[in-house]
Length: 267
Image 1 (cartoon, rainbow, N blue to C red):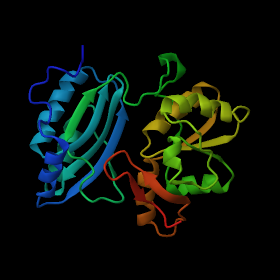
Image 2: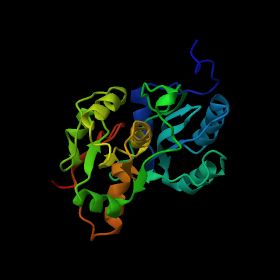
Image 3: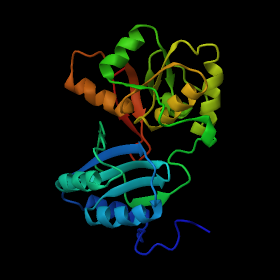
Image 4: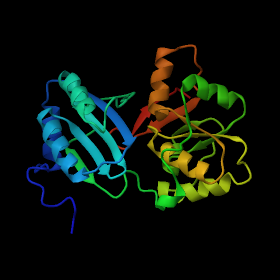
């Protein structure tokens, strides 16, 4: 039985062409945003229904995954409803003080409908529960700390799929050939064998895959694991705020919505 079935007014009845046409008729701008958090959700199905009702009322579009282990969300929010959306998110006991990652490039058409699904995991990783501890993750590094660590010779690992790293990556990063995150985790552990005492830096689009990977690596004996806070998206935002920081990312950041990619550097 589909756990997401039986929902009343919980899905979009329009086809893609109709939703695109509706979006193009909008007279306001939208803001593409993402967020995630590993937190124990007692009733993800009930939360799904609540979020859908509130966010549909605000004209929010996007793709959200809920699980007992947390939330993973990518959304498109009308700018005139942004403050109300933030207030709604932060008012939720599970999402208090939730940080948001705002898209670097945004044409307002990242999503065409609102979908909220309950899954077994917010990111499919294939790990057993005793292979990681999400309360014991790597150190979050801001852009300045990240650049300094790279300059000091730390090992950089791209935790995205191979087709993502093909259009953009940090210079010198290890880029696994895996097509899925589930395949990538054991591959990375093999690639890093013998480097348990060296500094390991992890990065991905927005940070969620690195959160799980750092917990996985620390569980397997890697002592000095760091992760790019907020992922590539927030790295680019921090560079905008501090022009003195060198941009060490080359190319585009692959994104899983209608935009497909956003330019991070001119290289």
